[in-house]
Length: 165
Image (tube, rainbow, N blue to C red):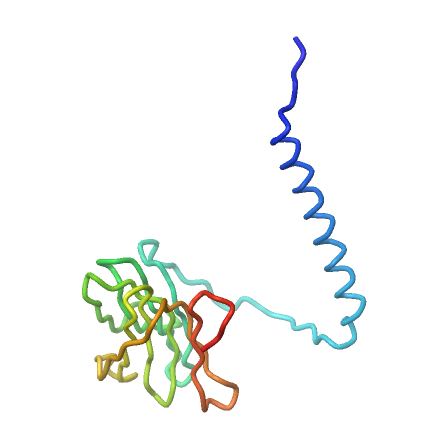
């Protein structure tokens, strides 16, 4: 019996091979151009923690003075903000969001935790020490991620588009 490959399958295979080749060429080119300009960093795994497999991490930051992680977990009906001991992985504090919210990005700005919601255009501010909500505001569009500037003077927001706000 003779088998015939259908055209869409062949097209997908050819496209996949082409993408892999272009990707390899782009990486080789970038490495050759920037090799002496990019600092190579080494790392060492010093600890491994268990993870709550029911949490859907959308924002994550490490706060060295307390050796703690602050985590924003998404999912409607399950969204929360947590403080987790970085040595043990134990949840130290947790605040649940109202069921209608899907939590997203998280950052620390001037000792205030800032947490976005995905589609409802709400941003929450929490006191870092107590993780109690101290304010909330509205914005237009979707909320995805947050970051602060290197000098910690500005907060940047991603809404999933090509623009940073």
